[in-house]
Image 1 (cartoon, rainbow, N blue to C red):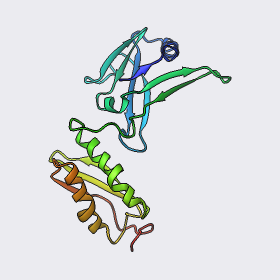
Image 2: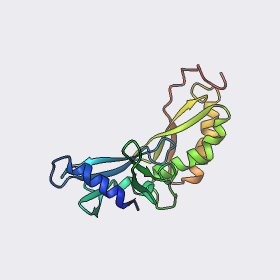
Image 3: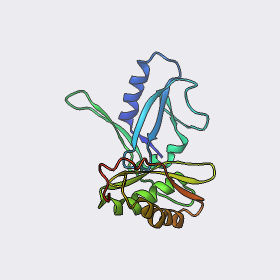
Image 4: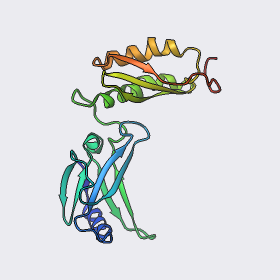
Length: 193
C-alpha cells in the first residue's frame, strides 16, 4: 500500500498541528485513476469527513484515510518530504495511478479504461483521436465519448461497432453494450468528413 517516509510524516504532523483541530488527519485519493490524467491528492480530513468505506492507517500523530476505490492506484505509492533551498517539497509518487495492475478482481471501470488506453486509443491516435469512458450504467453499458479527430468523423459508426465495441466486449465480457454520447455535429477536427 502507500508508504509515508519519516520525513513525510514529520512534515504532515507539522501541517496538521497548525490546523488547530483535534483528531485531524489526511485523506489520500486519486482523481481520474486509471487514465493518463490521473492525479494523486492529499487533503486535510477533519473528524467525520472520511467516507465510511475509507481504509484507516495509523501513523505517529495522525491517521491517513485511503479512499477505497483509489487503493489499486496507490499500490507502491510513496509520500516523501525533502528539504531544499526554498524550504522543501512534499512529493507523492504513485506509479500505478495511471494504469494499475488489472486482474479479474479489478472494477469494471478499471478494466474498460485499461482496454481503451492500451488497445483502442493507440490505434486512434494515428488519426488524432481518442475515446474516454464517461460512465458504466447499472445494466453494464459502457458510455463512451469520442474526442480529437474522432469527434464528427464520418467513420465513427464503423469505428464504434467494428472496432471499439468488439474489442471491449471481447476483453470485458460482462458488458451488455457500448454507447456513444458524443455530439458528432462538430466536424471541425474530424479525421474523415
